[in-house]
Every structure is written in structure tokens, then in C-alpha cells.
Image (cartoon, rainbow, N blue to C red; front, side, top):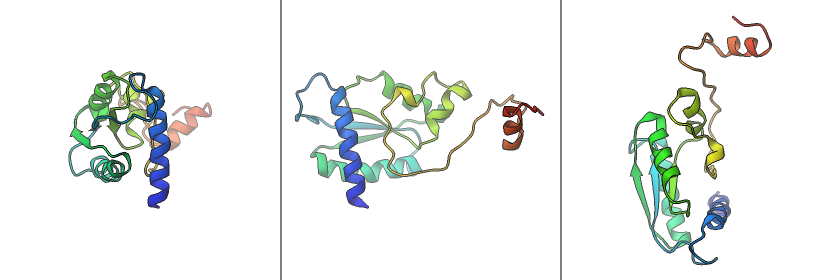
Length: 150
């Protein structure tokens, strides 16, 4: 399991390195990496980010600074990471479903296409509808998709 995680991390690192215009290949990382975690300390996103950063720090010979940035269902941290230089030194520590709901909830105009995604663990998929939606159940939503609204 550890080997698979490390292999996936190295692929992710290669993607981030490709975005880095300030350094020549092979130099990244030359400074500490910040991971802005979407939720409070002790939660799933925080716990996974801390465990992965401990493993990655050994493999990449760098340190990680984890910062818990709460609020807006993770969108505040997401917007902060997106606004940072796209140089591979600021990452978003998140759970898989968070970014997919920001537009629907009206929290941010960002989605997964705005980030390089790396999944260290799987989680169930989540459907989001607006709070004022007429759909109260998944079945109602599926019926409406088929053309039979509630």
C-alpha cells in the first residue's frame, strides 16, 4: 500500500513540476510546501493531509506546512490556493467531494478543472442541489432527469 501511495505521489509531483516555470527540472522542491486544509484540525481532510505530508516529506526531502483554513465548505481555502502562484508550492488539502459543490452552493466559481487532482483515498460520490431546489430525494432528481418532474 505504501509503495502505491508513493508512486501516485511521484506522478502528482511530476504534474506539479511541469507547472513550475521558475526552476529547472530536478530542482523542485527547493522550499517548503504549504498545504491549505479545507477543514478544522482533526477531521478527515486534516488527518489524511498530515499523514501524507509526513510520507511525502521523506520522499521529497522537504518540509510541509499545513494550515487549516475553515469556512465556506472549503471554498475559502480553495480560493486561497487558486490565488497563490501556480508553482507547485501551495496545495489544497481536501476531501474529494468538496470542490464539486462550490458552484452549486454559490460559494466560489471554481471546480475540479481548476486544480490538478490527486486522490489518496476514495470516498462516496455526493449529489448536490440548491437549497431552494424542488428535489428532496435522489429519486425525485432522477425522475426529473428522465422528464417526469415532481
